[in-house]
Image (cartoon, rainbow, N blue to C red):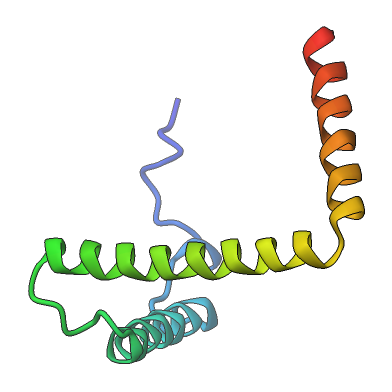
Length: 101
């Protein structure tokens, strides 16, 4: 019996590095690396020197976002108190139905 792997592979089975897919892979890698570089330059916390400083900046942004959302929620409740109360009752009924199951 002969070894089927002893002969050279057909020309169709040889992988060529200059194929279209290899060229597209290189272009995609270059594109992603360029996008990462641009994103790092545009980030407001890109110049931070430590993780601690980055976390503090993110926490400050989160606090500001939460304060603005709380203020807008308060304004909406003051503007339409009955609508807000009905939403609260509806949410309570839904939660009660879910917990009962």
